Amino acid sequence: MRIAHIAPLAEAVPPKLYGGTERVIWWLTEALVDQGHDVTLFAAGDSVTSARLVPCAPTGLRLSGINDHLASLLAMLDRVLVRADDFDILHFHIDFLHFPTFRHMTGKCLTTLHGRQDFPDFWPAYRTFPEMNLVSISDNQRLPIAHANFVSTVHHGMPRNLIPFGEGAGDYLAFIGRISPEKRPDRAIEIARRAGMKLKIAAKVDRADTAYFEERIKPLLDDPAVEFIGEIGDAEKPDFLGNARALLFPIDWPEPFGLVMIEAMAAGTPVIAWRNGSTPEVIEHGRSGFLVESIDEAVAAVDAAASLSRRLVRTAFEERFTADRMARDYVALYQALGADTRGALFGDSMTVAA
View 1: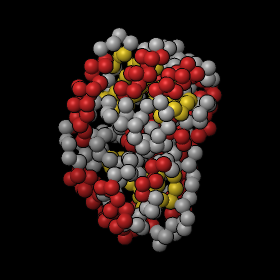
View 2: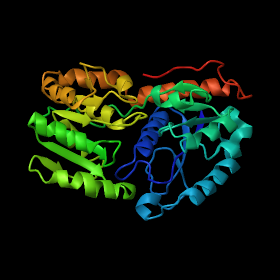
View 3: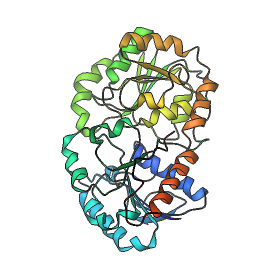
């Protein structure tokens, strides 16, 4: 199939540091190329891909210091529109910005929603453009807009060998992601302290979260048992995750997916996650980690994590969350989409999630 992927321009594909959406797009496009498809990627110019790259900004905009990405995204959409007839499928990863421009060709358009959908600010787009075919990355993600035209849930997947198995030799707890109120690094620090274990925090601080970091988190870092590493990239993740006893994922928001959970599972590292958002769809309680609802439960899970088989945690990843599986699920959707050129897709929602 001739497939176009339209990526956000905030980061390169793959991202240099933080950037879950761009990382997933990279894994998906590479897997589709490996499976023999003709893939074109519309993305930042410093992207690295086996697909055909159409550079739509010189570099990722965030690290370039460009804060308003709208103009660049509109220019990219014009390039996609001009070339739309070159592709069987247009797969968008930019929320709903393309809806007005591409509603007349919805039969070849698919949109994966990567972010949270519980803000009413976004809902008018789904009511106004009900014909646009949507994919959720967890069943939980779609609940606030259950009326929207979801055709499937496709859980994320990553390359099987990207993060190798680790023995957990470092005997510390890991936290990775963003320093923000919804990620609850304060919970992670309290859990580690009460469990009597070292905590390593690998996280970035967005400009919007600077005040939260300075006022709420930075004072908690004045503890020899807490090590703040800062933002890390793919090269550092295998050691960081593979040497941890467990990953703490104490979120306080409806997490759409939570990529770091499957990254930890790939390393054989159990995940201790708050039962919120997508976590019950990703974590098999007592096999790949533990689902908790309180600090007390999380502290107990730290001890229990030591008794889990890290090999079985790795197996849980291999069974459900590889990039090959993700690509096959999307190809099934592309084929179904192509079978209905009118865009009235599937009738009832289809499920191809892991």
